[in-house]
Length: 79
Image (cartoon, rainbow, N blue to C red; front, side, top):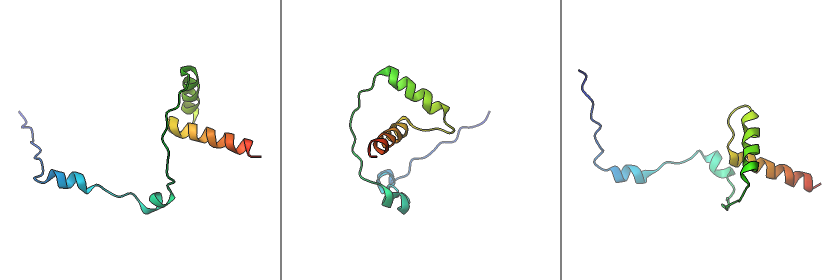
């Protein structure tokens, strides 16, 4: 019968947790301050968005899809 290995907790776990990490400088430099808000969307519209997202190659988040849609609308109405 195989023995289970026991993972030991580091002595200074708080130091490890609080150390954190850093992102790549290029990502940090290009990030614009974001504003978070709630958006009420009918379930039928969410289903349509999700169906369109699934048709694209690769995975795309619902948030990214919605941001792209907003940018498209702004571009069309800015002409």
